[in-house]
Length: 399
Length: 227
Image (cartoon, rainbow over all chains, first blue to last red; front, top):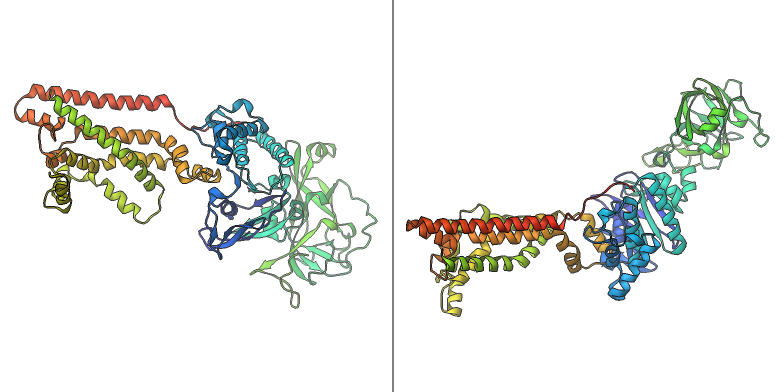
């Protein structure tokens, strides 16, 4: 599909979803993700673009094709359930069964779908007599009653509490085992997308910022904006140094820490960058660690203990001070202050048990080992182009 | 007690309410959901009988139905009698001045249906007609019933327009409201009192019955939180 419109919500989106695939559209409020879903369902008329399912055009602005919503084989689950309040759970589902089946078969199909959703005893209840999770399961059964060729979930799990949400995740997983159809899910919850989706598309102001597997998007965001949208807390500034081996100056001052990184040949020497490192690539030590053999060489400048701040450059070990420890149940978040130029902060999640075992406390000195393979470098964008030194190639998407 | 006037009033009231029921439902639904540029001026025009003095409305209707008007002329040619000062003329006038009483409660009821339910109906494959019959009317039934009752009750008590268009012809255009007025003019206060009490009783009974019925059927949707 491709959708374009200037307003009221601007859209310029191209998407594909394979059979069996769960695609998550992730973005902040007003990013156009729900508009995309509504356009697929036929509930929103877009002036330009096309939507095709298996070669069958549902919408094509140039050819004047616009299949009405009621004829599109789409199952849609809404955030607030949108169940018909005057009808029982069974009648809500039965109403969506194609009329060609006849009333008796429609009733059987509705009851079977409710059984599949483990709601058999609640068929006669009206929505107001059901809990949030039960309502959403009825809504899911109703969406399936339509015999859809695409399933659309519009923030379908956001109106229920945490345990119910996890139960619904299980329901969705069971559903995917039984049925083979593309599922497009809208969510603003990155964790939910990461947990459920095969692929995620990050949207902002109606544009796709990045598209890929959740792992790829989370660990290698295309730019700082994507990094912020996927919830990476620490987006650092730096300068890429194309030395042998390649280095990253953490901060923009000459006396800043230098870290080993990997040169993918896309950035020129001296390019100002933003960079992130996912938590799984950071190891915490309460004493200076030994250098691993696989990264024996140091950066060209700034060796450990040789005037390069606190970086043991050969292994990217950085000394820091634990400024704060925030315990949230099983997880403790450490706020590590790194003495680079300018000073930087790095958040690190450890288990509360691990924090207790290591006897971590605020004010304590610790060492962070940053795996060069986990350092993801993004060019600083300015006016739609990557800011790069003179002579550098424009538009380098990422290092 | 003028039983003939009471019977005529009841027939007029019933006919008006029954005719305006489907018309009101369709008009109210259109007004509630349409984005047509004519919607606002039409909505204002339909509300005119609420604010226009009944004598002014009655005057215009009388002129429109008189033998000199194109409508009156056609009607006279077809039936042999004028539309004004006849039961049919009274019914036409009653339909027109009752439009807001029928349409407004129905429109508010249709407007109260959440937009998401319309989306759900479309994604369930329901046609517009099926959406109206299986979703909208069952959800808006209170407003529809309210419009029906208000129309009937208002017709029973309407005086100004009825007097202008129908006059006071016994058995044809003399409604109970006109009859009460006639009795008062003739200083027959006892008869006027009996008829007024009867009208009051009937109206109260209708409104109470409607209210009881609405409560008995229960509220359609009150969201409950929790798992």
